Length: 429
Image 1 (cartoon, rainbow, N blue to C red):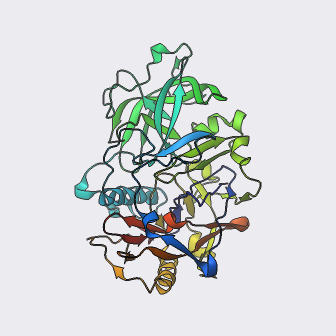
Image 2 (cartoon, rainbow, N blue to C red):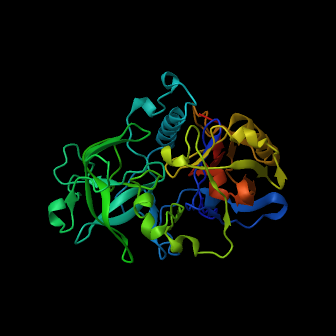
Image 3 (spheres, one colour):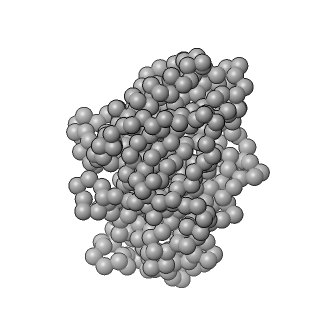
């Protein structure tokens, strides 16, 4: 199940059904709602839709739980001086969408397209980072938060193919509690993990103390010691924190302490979010709503796929339901994924949403945004000279009565200088 925090969420949906990326999520899914605008609209300053280059002094979330920052945001402090271009972001995203679709037989593998610009190979494009420690005494590392994979790994000393900073690595010999090899029965000592953008990490397993927070310390945690890491994972990144549902995920390995419960609130670029485990994850609000996790396609339980599936039933635009049949979203289902950027909807659902959105936004001039070959975000408005824009409320209706109202940055994407805004929900890949 999942916690949703629309005030800082970025939502992503995929497939012939869809992939959904919630900002706040728990393995037992509480939902926070945002305030409803008048007559289904919100008045929003156009300036608030544009990229930020300073970390907000009132950045929220960092005081509770493990701080989360955007990889290329001003709060990350990870040395990312130049973020990827929109074309690169969209190219990486479409490649990951194709990869996920192929896992559920949505498209024949031979028909999958490589959307990366000029076929350039990019690494695991996780957008959000957390800091953790391994060993005794703790060695600290910055990892990509990933709900779509289960293996946690970090670069280790004596790597063959190293990450961008070869001087940042875990040194097993410097930890008094490290043991080489698997400490989980029936798991081999070596590992290989592949991500949607074809980046990989290979190495051997080791077991040591995992430090999430000073009060959240877990001994004999099994993680990958990455020695052959291919792909551009980004500067300042030391590995991946796997939060999927597999046997080796952080969620599964800490189940005795946290009961497989966690939540995350993903921040906007100029703020800090939080990752919480156990009781902390569900004690942040007295008004949580829950939606159930459901089985993924072709499995007896969604754990086998590693992804988190939920039931999306319908969408509201303004104050009106689109009345999309729930069967449209049912096969193969709706996935929550922290590593995907753009919300993907089934074609029938997207067409209905797009039509309703364009009708309500008719007072604003449509534009192609000066972009070419941009089939993914095809609803763009030129807001040059506009101080405030009236944005429609968009609500996602999930099972068990959990409604999630998207906030402005989950609905449109603004571009500096040009002052264009694209609808941030797209058709299937």
